[in-house]
Amino acid sequence: MNFVDFRFPAVLRQLTRHLPAPLASAPLLLLLEVARRRALLVAPATLYGRSFRIVVEDLALTLCFHCDAGRFKSLPASSPADVTMTAKAVDFFQMASGMEDADSLFFRRRLRIEGDTELGVAVKYWIDASERPAWLSRCASRLASM
Image 1 (cartoon, rainbow, N blue to C red):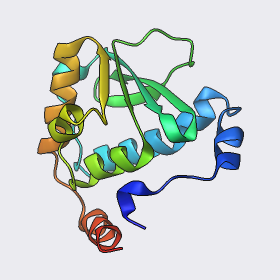
Image 2: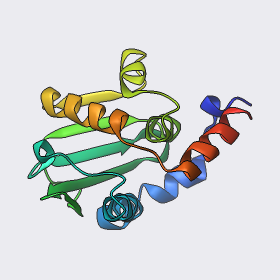
Image 3: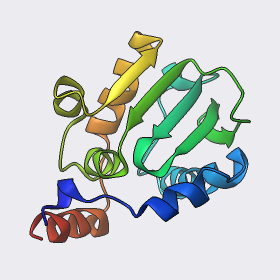
Image 4: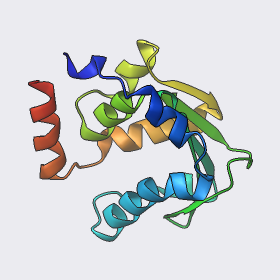
């Protein structure tokens, strides 16, 4: 099976659908905080005070957070978001690892951006320009060779 064709089991989608928003967002926020502390991912000032919603379609996850002076903090799922990015987990992984750039995913309709489009473009360029840790690149290479 090709990596991009991977789908999570339906039972996992049923479980994640019932996770409270702060719990669902915790792993992503932890990764963002570790990356921030190691200066791997420094949020530009254009993200300060802005709110984000990440929808992982195949896992039925909605992750809501905001940028507070460079630190990302959880928000309730019902909070309004300045920008919403929607894709499958594999597509988000490919974007985060550098296997695919956000523009390619967007133009192939595998990444949807709604809300403040200027902010969405700023986030896309920030992700594309960010340095990736070596372990993430190695993991992406192994998965791509599957």
